[in-house]
Image (tube, rainbow, N blue to C red; front, side, top):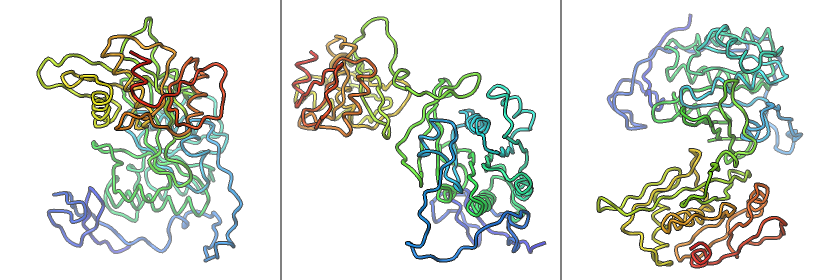
Length: 452
């Protein structure tokens, strides 16, 4: 057995120290440094238990590297493919994090059951019978997904040698243990060592690996921050446990955009892909209500129609309140100042509440005009026509500024049956849609003239 030695690690950032001290000099946290037993790895790593042929690395000139595009592996999940950038890249490591009970394991198991490739689903948290119960609800017929309940990485690699899967799913990285490290599962050194072994395996065998990661109460991936630097893609699965909608975002993606968004609906049979989220983000109403406006926004290259709700009322307690849910509160204050300065609306003594429906957060400046329209509608207590929508940015001098990819927004609004869309007259529009009117405006006073 290798000679044991101890080291001190910060449980917050993973920095290693030669001796104990009260404060971590890297992240400035107090009382986070603990002693862990570590041993030097033997010369043999994961390849000691496998016979997979690997390539010997040697330096090449950049023009000598084979530039043939490697085909991505289709996950047969349109939303997951969109967020990844088209599918799983061979040899990549994807880390999926999210709140407890949000559906991380369900999403990965659902994808594993859909794949026609040989898939190994490794679980350190559930037994095989428990996974079987969940799998019967999602997809009871599958002949390519193998379930393994194991936490030792060396034992996992032995099973990989025997099975030779095309894709490996680990649920979760915090439950794995390596024989090379003497500390308990989930510790800083164990998470780093297990991830390093999986990265080495993935890169040398060209096998994509999906890791599920726990998060802390602050919403960050549990373990050292270096874990997110080591993997190729970091996905975050978010949503409210009291609502059925789940949103998949990419915080880091070496092989695609980080602006894409995947939307799912949690059902008894698993997660349903939402192909047209605009219909879900716009609530159905029996009658017209004041304070509602529809905005045409973009998430990555995907156009969405979202509903903006505003409530303007007289301040009861003296000091007016400004509250925004799903929208930047400072930007709301800016738009209120523009309305007061440029359009003459006295909102300084009134409470203003703003909400983006569907529980999503939007930072696209193109919804500025919809926010202004909703505030005006609530202030005058007059409902806007339900077939109006808005896509423009509002400047500090009251000008209506152009936004990117306005033609995609117009086509999405036309597809959903809107009759009029308000955009900046400074946008260059080459299309001529048949079923929707494009209303060009240049100043906020023009908007007030149309709506009030």
